Image 1 (cartoon, protein in one colour):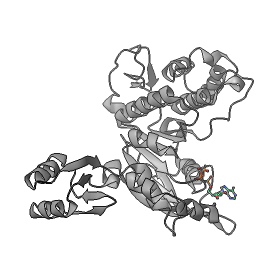
Image 2 (spheres, rainbow, N blue to C red; image 1 turned 180 degrees about the vertical axis):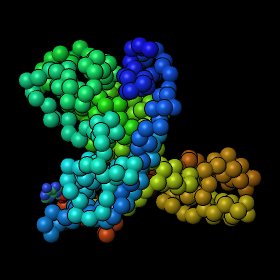
Image 3 (cartoon, rainbow, N blue to C red; image 1 turned 30 degrees about the vertical axis):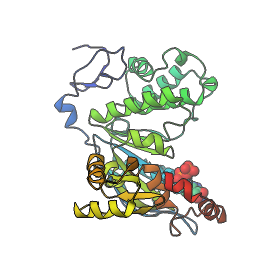
Length: 356
Ligand SMILES: Nc1ncnc2c1ncn2[C@@H]1O[C@H](COP(=O)(O)OP(=O)(O)OP(=O)(O)O)[C@@H](O)[C@H]1O
């Protein structure tokens, strides 16, 4: 069988690009025989890295599942890159393990086919074209050269690929790094800040691209500090602060239950009326925070109680708020900022907080 876009691995054609680029016709899913290969489960257990007396990563535990995009979030210097480097066998842990399908990176027989990564967008020979860069990597990895052109097409830089990589914009380097990560058609893809340097259209493209890769059953672990972007891209989240995990879960779990905010002519009357319907509400600023996301219910109860509604809106915790709530506690405040971190928190405008 010979079909453009497919890479032969043994007897199996493995699909990568179906449906990602709008110009690319829809292609069949990965055959079952390919899915029987690496599953791509990442397990981090008790992972610790000390540099001298400094503990960069501190007894970290988390799992990353196939078919999902997992965001690995933390403030600057919280230990994200060190963790990813341990996972990729580039840094030796002081204690604990980071494994893919139960094996440390060094124990994986053909690592390019199992895990692809882009840790830094700048590690290209500046005088070499993007295409040549990939061709060198393809040769080392034993990947057919035609795969390089497919990937360049896929990441959206087929024309630029013949120019010297030294002249690439940050966004183009990101795309080239992504193509390099995908060379071996890996089950696990690890990307450090992949949205850095991308324009809004590029970020939208990246989001669709990552989703497609996850839908193919791959495992995606992406570190990021762009919380607003990540929220729309990831399924699961691991948040770390000062080398320690402070949260893990699906985005929906971490956001918690939706609530409503309502301003009325008579807040006390509405609190009572809602309470009669089994819904709790409490004063917040000029209005009430209500423990339900059902705006129709709140509006109907207010109407029945003859209370005028001046404002009514649903509220959901955003990842960004959760992130700051978790990482700005006294215990988790960024150790690298010293007093500046504390000052930032002190100077936040409570009115602003209330409006969030
Ligand atoms: N080789 C090293 N020697 C000493 N300290 C190090 C070394 N590598 C990292 N660190 C320290 O470990 C901490 C975690 O660094 P790391 O780069 O993993 O954080 P990060 O979360 O990726 O940060 P950023 O978002 O800024 O990239 C930092 O305080 C950093 O200075």
